[in-house]
Image 1 (spheres, rainbow, N blue to C red):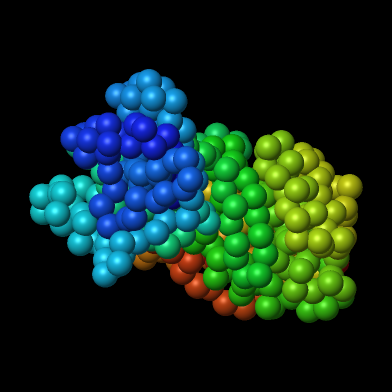
Image 2 (cartoon, rainbow, N blue to C red):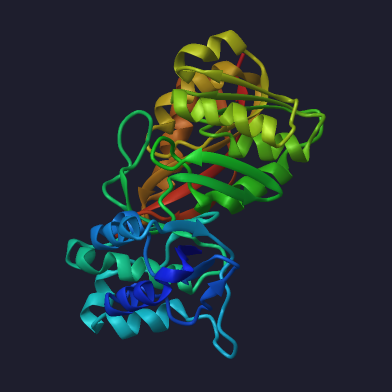
Length: 351
């Protein structure tokens, strides 16, 4: 949690200022040392010009310290705090839940709630035992690198995530890469399907979650990871080292162009690019062995799953492969009418 470190001679002035401006976090202890007093803050100073100016005037500094709750106080509930500060119609404008990236939470707010976003962010931080930074989505996922604009809302001013999932750790800048914690189950599921000694190709590998989780669970497997985004590729290399996996080979480049370099490599191909996965069926068939398993993620209308599967079968047929459906499951709702699905299939060369 963020505390304002104040020299003892300025403590009373600081307390008065923070209380008057609703910047003193309730329910947390004011801490003391030999020379300083530490006041728990409701927001990060850089986001409030008056607080930043006041801190400069008394040579106060922001310090990150473990939050200490006042005796008898309980951790405030996020939903309860929202009910206090938002009208019923405003709560409807706030998307339920948030995307957790370790100590970072990314929320989605309507334009109407922007004036209250700092308070909403602090309510989330106060109600969480792990979140210290809240960011808000500023636009959709876009571009060939699949990045999303985000803005700072509350807490520690950082964009660097340190995220743990299924026994693996990942670091990345949330502004520069695509990463979805909502695919955690899928990454675990696919990893459990892989057999020791398999060769697995993961195009659109991002910062490495599918590839690294498979490699860590199956040290005898060989994993090929390809990512177009240079920033994501750089973080994938860091995450490979962080997780101490020696059986992942990572490449930075276009899967469509790199597939030929690894022709006939894979027993299994994982394609976590739902928006354009079908456009890369040819490349997937190139990197795969004559008989291989494919996990294809795709968006489709909720009532047109069969049509989506038929289109996949058609694309494999164009590459002279017989398509056998193993299973299909809904990964998550994507929009009002669309869902994300994953199709597990075996495709065998006709020749």
